[in-house]
Image (cartoon, rainbow, N blue to C red):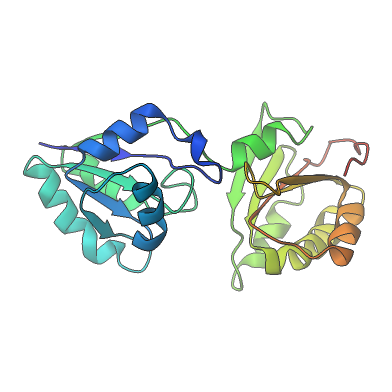
Length: 231
């Protein structure tokens, strides 16, 4: 039997990759990459030339059986996403589950993921939280938000720049304008920014400042008091 490794890659700054991650990627017989073009830049930077196979949400069901067969035959396979930890709002869950079912050892390396630094630097309670990732775009979106209306834990969401204003507007409607929030973008990159305050204040900010980059939105739970605005 081979081994399946889930390997986190930097969400921005390439210095965030670990020595162990580099070693596993160099030793792997096959690297499953969400986007081989994006991952190719990372691997080229660290002079890693191992074989890559495209593995993303549109082909993972067609690819997973072939990957498991290679694992059963003794290959070492590493899974990487475009950024962060595979399986966290990225491909990785399916191949891990099927490898486990096949009796293959699955090892996940600790490393970069976007929501942890956003949560810890938010100023909101991080002892208990719920990770929601990307909300449904259409069907089930409003019902999911309504289900979270009474959530007392800190809530974490991912969002793309062109939907930030829309989702903050919905949060104001569901959670109320005074609910505290921290919106973090471009984590570990040159233009990293955190905007903190009430939902209404942060919405106003992004209505006049065009959202750019990838976003993590951290919203206080129902019982959380309003925090001081910091931009």
